Length: 99
Image (cartoon, rainbow, N blue to C red):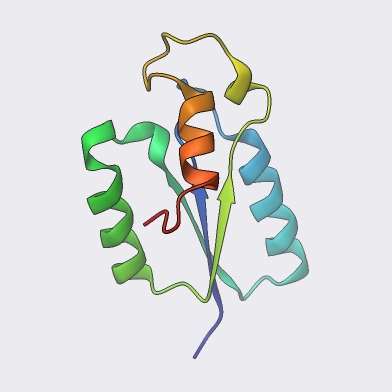
């Protein structure tokens, strides 16, 4: 099985996911034949997070799943497009099964 990396950018206010793009670029420079994909949950409606992520994982079949988020964003004030980023982060970290 060929190695594949799926980067999942956790939802936050709509910003360009520069950190995960830099990481994917660096990995590509080291391993140019490694297949990679970035899945941005920030571009998905909140009610569709689980089904969209399931569909992406089922289709791409990654061997490594990487979660990325913008550190500054998780402490941003409430009221962004995706609701309360800090709450979502803690729900994810402390969930017995985030999927």
